[in-house]
Amino acid sequence: MRLAVVLAALALSACAAGPGPRDRYARMLTPTANPSKVVAAELGFARAAREDGQWTAFRELARDEAVMFVPEPVAARDWLANRADPSEAVRWQPHHVWSSCDGSLAVTRGAWQSADGSQGYFTNVWQRDSDGDYRWTLNQGEALDTPVEAPEFVRTDVAECPARGLAGQLRTQAEQSRPVTGGTYFDQVSSDSSLFLTFVVSPDLSRHWKLMLYRDGHMVDAMAGSAAVLQED
Image (cartoon, rainbow, N blue to C red; front, side, top):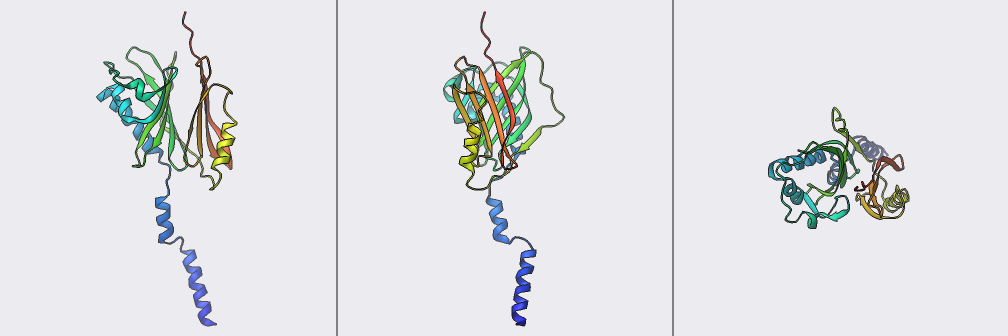
């Protein structure tokens, strides 16, 4: 009887001590968000454009399936092939980063400035490769009459981690919340479905987008917008 009491006490003590080495090791192997690394990737991308050439940097840091909007959607690999770098690259700075819980996908948004004095905003989507590095998989931007106000620091928002088995349900919920119906969809979904970004290109080439993150048990809106295609005179 005394031995049983001692063994029970030891078991309770082990539980109170917290997770064992196996649990800690499992947590180390679980993919997690790292928004600071995404910001570093964006800053490195902008620096490479200045130092190595704008389109050279775009080519070298793009995923094979990357898409650009110019303003029509194009396969980046084809559009960038053999494209000469401008004499002076566009400059840009990230203002906000959103990341999935597992860090497999992230979205950055910020401001850009061109040598000719034009300016605007950009949105980049970053996907983490098997080596842990991020490469861009979607790029879009728009010119603005007034500059985008720079924040004091880069804002970060990370999705909560959904329970296992919810991926399909969350994706369906996000797809049903697209900003418009019709057109061509360019969906960006994280591996754990905690981040969903959809771009919809309408037949007139206007663009509409919506970013959603998993919060408090369901997908919530994080960012949305539209860009109309200017008609030539």
